[in-house]
Image (cartoon, rainbow, N blue to C red; front, side, top):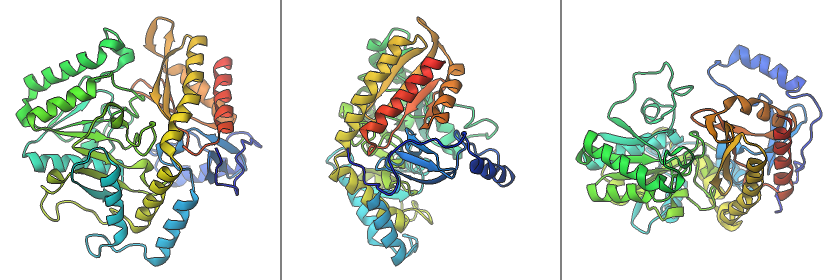
Length: 448
C-alpha cells in the first residue's frame, strides 16, 4: 500500500541506545515538571511521525503498532488532516459553538449521523474526549428514560472522570485512591470466550442469560436507564464477546425500554474491519460514543443516537467550552474523507489477514500464548502460564515489550490481568512495515 508521507522515510532505523541521549535529557526535565501520575510506556520523545513510522529526537525510527492507542487510524500528520485543520486555524481558532456556531460542527454531526449504524433519524453532539462522550451518553439516557441505573460489564474501560471510573472495571491504575465514585452503576459478567467456564461455544448465550437474570433480580429492568458496553473491549484485553451476547442484550433492552449504548471510542472508524465494531453482528445501538480515530489525532469525541433520545435533553443541558473545536472538526472531516476515499475499512481487514495468521503461528510454537483474538487491525495475544494452564502470565510481558521497543517496534499492552499484548497499527501502514514489525515480535518470543 502506498503511504503519502514522503518527507518521513517509511523505514525502521535504530542509531542510539533506547532511549537515546536526547530522550534521556528530556526525561530529566519531565521528572522535574510533570506529575508522576502521568505515565509513558516508551519514554522516547517524538520529533515527528507519519504513515507507519514514529521518529524520536535522537533520530531513531520506530514501526508504529500503537497508533497513539487507536487514534491515528489515517496515519500521523495525515496530509488531508494537516491541510484542512491548518486552513481552519488560519480562519478562526475558537468561538464556542454555544455562543457563535459554525458550519464545521454541523458538518461533522451530519457525517456521523450518516455513517453510524441504523437508518433511523439521528442527532449528534461533539465533545473533547471519549470519557466525556460516555458521560454525556449516560446523561442523555437518564434524561430520556427518567431512570438512574446504568449496567456495565467486567473488564470494561470507559474513562477517567468520576462517573467513567465508576463504569470502568479495573482498579489499578485507573481507580485506586480516587473514590468515592458515582452511584447507580451495576456490573455484569462479560462474555469472555477464553475464560468462560463452559467454553467459548457456550459463552455468548450463557453470559447473556446470566446478565439478564442478574439485572432482573438485582436492579429491575424498569429502573435501568442504559446498558453500556464496548463491542470489543479495549483496555480490558481486546475481548471479543462470545457470539450472540450483544444481540441478546439488545433484544432485552428493546423489550424493556432500556437505552443500549455502544462505546466505540477505541473500536470506531474502520479499526476492526467494519466502520464500527457493532456492525459485525448487525447491532444498531440507540446511542454510540466515538473519539480516538475520529479526527486524525486532534481532540474530538461525539455522541450520536436516535433523535428522540438525543432531543430529550433540555436546551443548554449539553455542551462545553471546547466541544467541537473548529480545527478538530476540520480534521475530522478530513479523516472521514480519507477513510472512505482510501477504503480503509477494507485495508483494516487486510491488515488482520496479515497479523492474525502469524499470531496463531506464535500460539502454536509457544505454550505461553493462551489466546489470539481480535478483528481487523485490532488484535491481541493473551499470555498464560503454559499449556493447559490459563493462569495469567503478566511477567512474560515486560521482556517481550522491552525487546520490541529496543529494536524499533512500538507495542502496547492491555488486560485486566496485565497479560495481553495488543497490536493497533495505523491503517495506512505499509505491508513491508507490517512484516518487519511482526518479525521483531517473533524474535522477542524466541529470545524469551
